[in-house]
Amino acid sequence: MEHIRKTYGNDPLFSDFSLTVRSPGIYALCGESGVGKTTLSSVLARLYADEGRTVLAADVDPDANLGLALGFTEEEVNSIVPISLMFQEHRLFPGETVLKNLLLSCFSAPAKEDENRARDLLSELGFSDEDMAKYPDMLSGGMARRVAFARALLFPSDILLLDEP
Image 1 (spheres, rainbow, N blue to C red):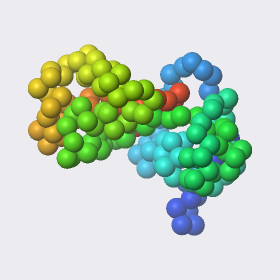
Image 2 (cartoon, one colour):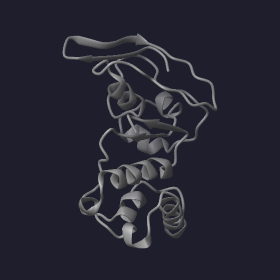
Image 3 (cartoon, rainbow, N blue to C red):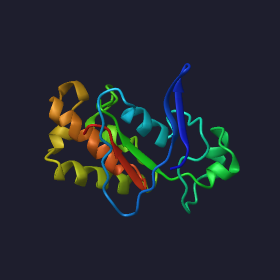
C-alpha cells in the first residue's frame, strides 16, 4: 500500500502512509488506542475512502462492472485485492442463524458447496448442528466471536484483516 492519507475533518490521521509486505506472511499492526489501526483496516478493506493515491495492487481479475458501479476507476478496479475483515465487534445479523450469517459472506461457489464449507468450518470451531441453528442473541460472547471469525475466513479473499480478534 502506498501513500495512504485519511483525515477526519481538518485533522490528519494518516499522511503519506506506505507499507510493503511480502506474501505469504503474517503481520501485526500495533499501536496505542486511538492511533488509527481500525481506520487503516477499514481503508484497506475499502470501507472508508483513501484520500491518497494507491491502496493495494495485485494481478486479480475482479468483477469490473461492480467496481465501476462502486465508483472506482478502471485502473483501480484492476488493482483491487479481495480483502476480508473481522471487526472488533462481531457484527452478526441478529435475524439470521449462525449458519446463515456465514452463508451471507459466500458467493464464490454453488450454494450447497458453500453450505458444506460453512458447516465444516463451524464444526472445526466447536459448533454443533444445534448451535448452527441458533440466533446471535442466543450465543455467548466467545461463540459470537468465533462465528465472526469463521465468516471472515469463509469470505473469498486474498487478505484477511483481523481487528483485535
